[in-house]
Length: 128
Image 1: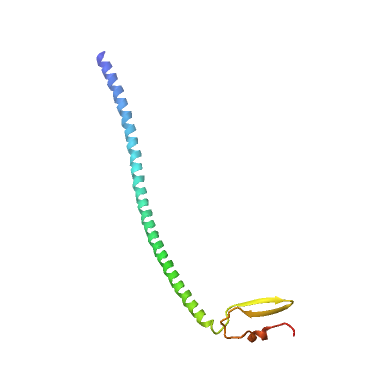
Image 2: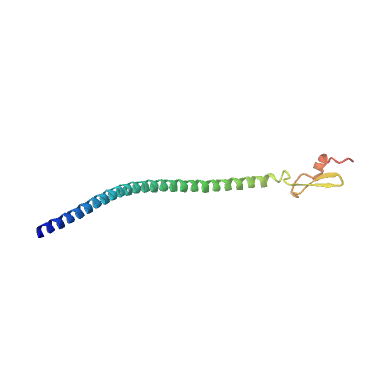
C-alpha cells in the first residue's frame, strides 16, 4: 500500500510541477513580450530625445536670429531718427489742425522750422 501511496503522491507532485512549469513558461513569454516592448520604447525615447535636442538647437538658432534682427532694427531706427532730426531743420514735421468757427487753420508746432507760418496761408480754405 505504501508503494501505491508513494506513486499517488509522486503523481500529484508531478501534476503540480507540470502546472507550475506551464505557468512559468507563460510568465516567461509575457516577460519576453514586455522586454521587447521596453526595447522598442527605449528606442522611441531615444528618437524623441534626438528630435527634442534638434528642436532645441533650432530654437536657439531662431532666438539668435531674433536678437540679431532686433539689433539691426534698432540700428536702422536710430539711423532713421538721426536722418529725421537733420531733415527737420528744413521741413516742419508736426502740424496741429484747429477749427475755429467754421475755419480751419494749420499751425506749425515745430518752432525750429525755417518756413514761416505765412507759407501755409495758401492752405487756408476759409473765405476772406
